[in-house]
Amino acid sequence: MHSFRLFIIFILLSFSVQSQNKTLKVEGIVLDEAELSIPYAAVSITSKYIGTSTNEDGHFYLELSKKNELDTLEVSSIGYLTSKIVVKEFLELKEKVIILKEDIVSLDEVNIMNPQQYVKFAFKNLKKNTVSSVHELKILNRFFAVEDDKAKFFVEHYLKIKDVGPRGGIDIRRIDILEGRRSEDYRTYKDANIGRIYPVNFMAKIDPLRRGISIKDYKWTKIGDTSYDGEDIVIIQGVNQVQKRKNYLDPVLYIGIDSYKVYKTRNKASNVVYIYKKNDEGKLYLSYHNHYTKRFIDLTEEHQRILKTTNEQIKLSKRNEVIVLGIETDKKKIDVGNTYVYRTKMEEIDVNYSAQFWNTVNLPPATDYFKKSVKELESNFGIPIDTQFELVNK
Image (tube, rainbow, N blue to C red; front, side, top):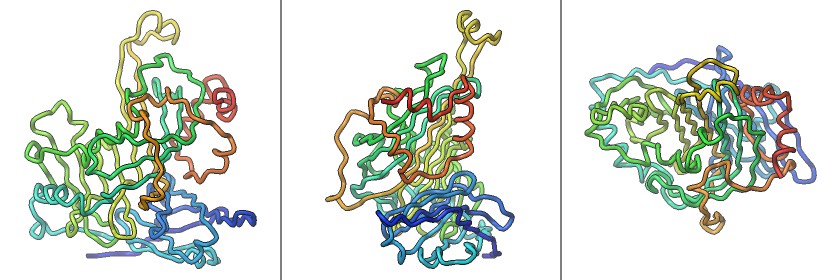
């Protein structure tokens, strides 16, 4: 294996210690030696199940307790060796720079198995390789409804789910919404963008690791290789030979050649993505997910007049992001209510809104897509998003 140095630069953008609650607020950015950002890298204290992900610009924000100063901060991303540094040492660096090595992998075709065999072993070892006992995930769920490439509606929830990972099947029924907020609703088609089930549950239904795959129905092909945390990864794409109309679900799996762990999945079009990270036992759990869907519907003459257009169709799209902010595996500390949220539209859920909560909660930095969509929402009638939150949410 050949390797060369890349710079992963953590620029400490802000750091403060609040004397009353003794918290450490750490912001940074993850870049390579070409000063290009590394998106969706896992940034965490693995032993304490505290973590977040970088956004698409490589920025991250992590709020730690004073007692975490002697814990180890880990940063990992597919294609790079994991960086480890004690939190206190990182904060004391004059220059907040960590030098990592990127793995350059070119697997010898003679030394790897048939792609279908890797897929077979990956599914056979799912229970062993993932957090498959009862656990709780703290999640940020962001949803935008878009008409003709302009955001018209936004809903955001902070929630907890109780789950057992991929072996739990396609339903996540224990979903507890803790806080929520929404924008003004500027949609012309108010029922067309929101799914019929809660987005986190939809996420589970289209997850190739949860819904299961009839391996023999697919043609499996190796399309690349990379690495994660020192393990070589083979990238394998499956194309369904039976249900070709569902090619949007054709999976691409990033499988470790030694452990058969699935570190990432996406569909062929890359508009459905799942990224996983390790706990302190080396088992994987979900870190980040997004899906983007679109469809076209015919416009009536009335809607053409409303929209002031002669176009015969309108493009409706939605983007959903799920960012996992933490995991709890101690059964005594798991507390998720039994609700019917899993089969409810996101916009129909009546949840608490607290401006103070959203101003203080440990959220990841906004992605470019988030900032772009918020700007579009504000441009509909020139109303700032914070004002919309105040007017709409009770």
